[in-house]
Length: 246
Image (cartoon, rainbow, N blue to C red):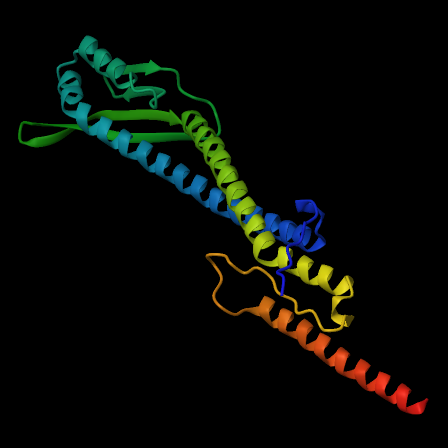
């Protein structure tokens, strides 16, 4: 028996394919948005942690030299230390609040998302810890928001490309594995071949790497062929009865 090869319609003309495409887009977009949002939030938390760690490191690194400058009332050296701290782009301003000196470097931010770190300054002298004042560091999250925006843009575009690629692959795989065969079966039945004598058997090409040997498509093909044989049997009985009636 000949193998039926269906000269299919345009790819997006199948209602079943369009339904599959719609549901896949909705599910894929929702899942991608959830994952991307979680990644962006995790990235933001990482930036916050990095900023807090940076402020702690800065205060620890400069604390010894700063305490000596304050103890010796060396205003010039203390100011140089503060200026060096503000060279880090994440530190907007720094201040020294003490009984003897009031020094600052940078501009104190006035936004709503400000991180402020107060570090007490001590020096060990004369057998005791002497309090010299507070080192106050200011940072805002504008730079963090810029980093998050760049990260979010890149990740959204990347996920969009991956989602579209997977969507197209899934769509055409569904088209090749399901729609094509359903259209072949529909064309075979609509052509009236199940009523011909002798019965023409429906055969479809399942020669694909993903074919497992038997699946639901084969069940449909078997049902169509069985229907053809049963129709021929009943037609034969009807013809016999009509001839006998004559």
